[in-house]
Amino acid sequence: MVIGGDGFCGWATALHLSNKNHEVAVVDSLVRRLFDHQLGVDSLTPISSIQNRIRRWKALTGKTMQLYIGDICDFEFLSEAFKSFEPDVVVHFGEQRSAPYSMIDRSRAVFTQHNNVIGTLNVLFAIKEFSEECHLVKLGTMGEYGTPNIDIEEGYLTITHNGRTDTLPYPKQASSFYHLSKVHDSHNIAFTCKAWGIRATDLNQGVVYGVRTDETTLHEELCNRFDYDGVFGTALNRFCVQAAVGHPLTVYGKGGQTRGYLDIRDTVQCVELAIANPAKPGEFRVFNQFTEQFSVNDLAVLVTKAGKKLGLQVQTISLPNPRVEAEEHYYNAKHTKLIDLGLKPHLLSDSLLDSLLNFAIQFKDRVDHSQIMPNISWKKIGVKPRTAPV
Ligand code: NAD
Ligand code: USQ
Image 1 (tube, rainbow, N blue to C red):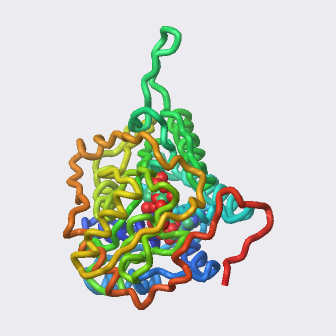
Image 2: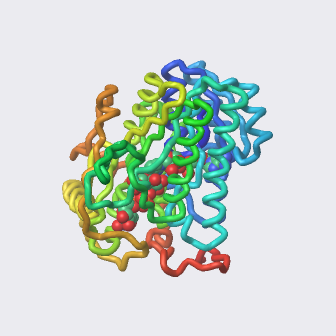
Image 3: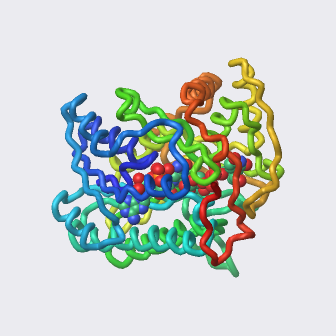
């Protein structure tokens, strides 16, 4: 059961798992498509309805996918989906995932935490009630750890304090209401693994880039979404679109912000590996899911070089940082557990950047330039409802 299976990571994963002969159900409320309408933004790529996507997949491969449209915060809906599909594995992508969205105003902050925390709590209750053996593969985020001045471990840290030693959950220092919702999820999952014997894998994923996977390229109706706007667009994908349309690359502040990154083809591979090697009953496993670290400045340099090869004049501007975050910091995060399970990373090479830039160029006429600049400030968030600027 792929919850959030109509989204960016979820659609690619649902197709990949189906291709690998898993019996797949997509569960999605389609709220992500609604955010686009509310904010007046759109995917760079045209995307088909989930019904057409699934029909096209069946026509091409003969493989069926079940579809449950509904909100996992509605326990009755979720229960019916569980009883009817009887999942052995739940892959949970179904959350509001934009940090800027969660910082627009009070109502979006509350929506994000309610949607994410209650949704996950419902999934935990559904597993306990209907499918006790089911393995939960939950998408967390590297942002749960923040940017501490020591190495980041995979979920746990062994500490000696006043002569006694213990292995404890790694300290969490998230820096948006969205990232905090993931911290709250992790605590709830850890508790239910202990209390009810649930088996869970928390995939603390870094920033995902790219768009194409083996399956999404088979037909235009299988094409994945590609966000480039200031609310849902993520760093490298945004920079490629900016380079394609001649907009200066938008580095926030000093640009030393360093994060873990991975190709979307590795997202689907990591989920497949987590499913093939399940957590034990009662185990709360944490994997750091990224393949390479880059600062925002590193990304700007890489995109500038790749653009030059394609004849693009790429400029960079430093914008006042709309977020509250460290702009120069130590960052060294472990990420060996998925490699130990067999992950073969697609590292960010020149040819990969070329193809990502070419992809952005192919769709550049669809770019709405007014959606590129960031306009959500961590400091200015207030209780008044904010509408999208027109
Ligand atoms: P997305 O917004 O494209 O997809 C999320 C999907 O979940 C959407 O289709 C949405 O409609 C659905 N959804 C949200 N709330 C729901 C609810 N209550 N009930 C049912 N469906 C619901 O996001 P994405 O980029 O695919 O991210 C998927 C997951 O991976 C998220 O949990 C996100 O936090 C995590 N993640 C994403 C990235 C990234 O760079 N994209 C990086 C790290 C972690
Ligand atoms: N940044 C810029 N310029 C831009 C966009 C971003 O300098 O135009 C900077 C941000 O300030 C930040 C870094 O790049 O320091 C990453 O920002 P992002 O928007 O690419 O990613 P983030 O907000 O952290 O969120 C994304 C996904 C989220 C996921 C997270 C993984 O939207 O769902 O959880 O990546 S992580 O960053 O590891 O927490």
